[in-house]
Image (cartoon, rainbow, N blue to C red):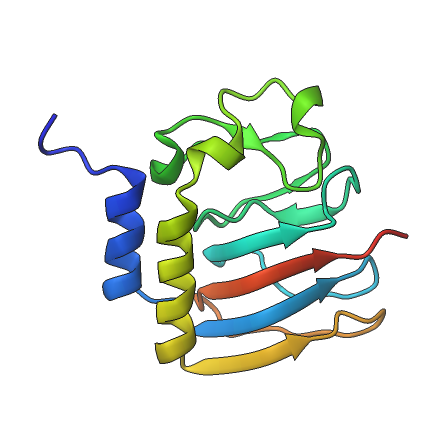
Length: 153
């Protein structure tokens, strides 16, 4: 229908106006760090080294949900309401309604990340994520992470 908005339009609108308030260029996630994601919408440009780690991670795709391993993340407007694999699971071992690599428009995601980098209230080039590192952002702050690296332990 003409009045329905697809994921690309939603991300383009996010890139143009509804921006995350914190931008992190590179985030290194390890089991010891305690970056506070809960309740914050998070857009991730790319997850690297996360597949198969079973680590508790944010689902990404502009949602507030967390997941771990072979779970399905809840559907959202970017996936047409369909569930998709958690970034720390193995997609072929989940029974989600869609594969996140085909459900998510990467070009639109990159546009949202670039807009966040240009206009975010807080910018962090690299968050090390070393054991014991902790970063908590204010209530309601949305986050954009260009590259989310997982450490295997």
